[in-house]
Image 1 (spheres, rainbow, N blue to C red):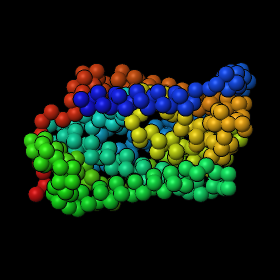
Image 2: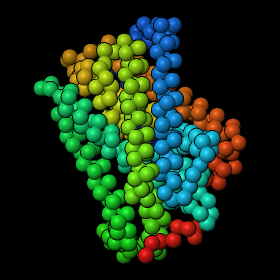
Image 3: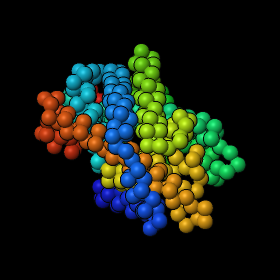
Image 4: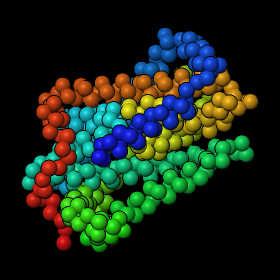
Length: 363
């Protein structure tokens, strides 16, 4: 049932996103012209530079996870860490509704030592810290770009994004400081303890295991390096978007590139379409429109600029395509190494089949 709901939401997002970005006849001609005008021989150095930056992004994104795992007694060798992370990143991109987030935790579980639920707790911390960082980026860049012609949704989006992830961080801190009370409160508020007592008991156990993965929040020795790697990851991510935009002839500033990147990062926390197709392009175009032209997406507007629409959509398609090639390629290459096998991936389909002694609920 959960899988059906996730797939349903994913397909709805796919249909909505494709409808939002699908070009009309005039825009289709402009899109074709935008691709025709791309001089791939001249663009090649930009693509090489972009891929080099993405490789740094990939390393920062993967390497920082060890600092989240260390407080729960897990330390992966560099080869294993990069392989597991690469497969996990590929799964996040390919699988709908962010189901790929479960792959990394499932691959590193060790019976009697660490459960996938505890490892999933580290991923929860990672996602929330990432959300806070990009929300701050969105907030700062949106303020810098905001003017009288900005769309009405611009600043409310920044405030809501910052508020949501700040509340999530407060929830993490409460769960870490008062785990039993936080879990009981959650079960009471959701009425699960009353509606489904057996499910509530099982969920209570899993939530305590999950909270174990929050341990980095009281371990400055690992938290500080994790935050530094996270800042490096997001800075290089924004830089890569700017480099590709400039190489494709879009007059986008570095601030505009970071605004676009932040909006995409916040937007894909929603249930994503398969491969983020349509969704990634729409969010990219929406982010670019904040600086270049507020009406770039209004296909039926009298001031609609078809040529700009074609250029921006070409950029969004190119950006997404290079991301897909990189992450799918890296994931498949990882599976070909001794560090991750197809049998492990098959076993990972069940996140955490039984409780682990080392993850007993805290008293």
